[in-house]
Amino acid sequence: MSGRLSAVPILKKLFYCSGLLAVASPVSAEYALNLPEPASELTREVYDLHMLTAKIALYITLIVTAVVFYAIFKFRKSKNYEPDQNFHTGKFGTWSWVLVPIIVLGIDLSISAPAIKTLHLIEDKTEADMTVKVIGTQWKWIYEYMEDDVRIVSSMLSEEEAEKAEGEGYLRTVDNPLVLPVGKRIRFLHTATDVLHAWWVPAITVKKDSIPGYITETWTIIDKEGLYHGQCAENCGRGHSYMPIQVAAVSQAEYDAWLNNKKQEQLAALEEASSDKTWSKDELMEKGEAVYNTNCLACHQANGAGIPGAFPALKGSPIAAGSVDKHIEIVLKGVKGTAMAPWDSLNDFELAAVITYERNAWGNDTGDLVQPAAIRSAR
Ligand code: HEC
Ligand SMILES: [Cu+2]
Image (cartoon, rainbow, N blue to C red; front, side, top):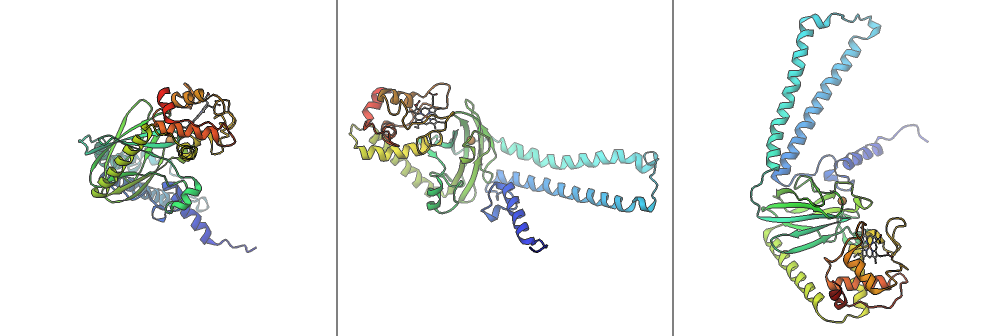
C-alpha cells in the first residue's frame, strides 16, 4: 500500500457531502454546493438573505481566525511575552467594550433590515390567481386544485418503476407531479390527515408545516418553467423519507391542456365507477393491484405480510380472507384510533377492486369478486 493519500477521492467525497447537506442529493451536480437555484421572487429573496448571512459569517470567521493566529504567534511564550495586566484600564481597553457591541449590533441590523422585508413578502396576502390545497398523508401527497375540482395523488415510484421512468431516479421521482403554470400567483393551503408533515420545495416557496386540523398558507409566482424537487421536511414516521415532491412548472397553455385532460379523466373514472357494469376478475385484480400499490402498500407491504407489531398482515388475515362484509366495512370506515384510515374517498370501483385484490392475492384464494354495487350499498 502506498502511504500517500490521493486527494481526488477525498475531494470528491467532500463535494458530495456538501451536496447532501444542501439538498440531500448527491446526483444533481448543479445543486451540489449551494441551495437550489431560486425560481420565484420570493425564494430569490430567501436565497439572497442566505448568501448575505453566509458571506458575513465567512468574513467574521476569517477575521477572527486571523486575529487568533496572529495573537498565538506574536505573544507566544518562547518570546517571553508579558501579558498586559492593565489592558482594561487603558483607552483602547475601555472603548473596546463599547465598540464591539456597536459593531455586532450594526451587523445584526444590516441582516435584519432585508430579513424584515423578506418576512413581509412571505406573509403577503395579495389575492391569488389559483389555490392548491396540499395534503400530507402517510406517506404521499394529495393535491386539490380548489377552483377546478381536480385532485391528484402523488406517490413515490418504487425502485424498479423509477429506473424505468428515466430522469431523477429512485427516491426522487413520483407518479404524478404537481403541475403548475408559470407567471400565476399561486396560493398553497397546507394541511395533513394524520401527523405533521411539511411541504418543502425550496426553489419555489418557503417551508410551512402541514398540521392535521389546521390550514397554513404559503404562496409563489414561479417565473421559470422546469421540474422542481422537494421533500417532506417534518419527520412523519417510517415512510418519511419516501415522500419526495416534484413540481412541473409549465406554460399557461400546457397547463390548461393538462387540466382539461385531468378533468376528463376524472369524469370518465367517475362514470366508470358508478356504472352498474359487472367487472371480470382480471379487470378487478388489475385495477385492485394499482389501487393497493398507491394507497395500501406503505403499511401492509407489497407481499401483504404487513409489519408485525405495527400493521397487520392481509395475507391469511381473518378479515381479508374471511367475511366480505367485514372487509368492506373496515376499508370504508377505517379503525378509529389506529393508522387504518377510512378510505371512503376512493370511488366504488376502486374500493371493489382493491378489496377483490386483497381477497385473491398472496394466496388468499377466496375466489370472491366484489362489485362496485356492493360498495355503494355499504356506504
Ligand atoms: C397508514 C397505514 C395503513 C394504510 C396506508 C392502510 N392500512 Fe389497513 N390497516 C392498518 C392498521 C394499523 C390496521 C389494524 C387496525 C386495527 O387495529 O384493527 C389495518 C387493518 C386493515 C385490515 C384488517 C386486517 C385485519 O386482519 O385486521 C384491512 C382489510 C385493511 N387494513 C385494508 C387496507 C386497505 C384496502 C388499504 C388501502 C386502501 C389499507 N388498509 C391501507 C394500517 C394501514
Ligand atoms: Cu411527511
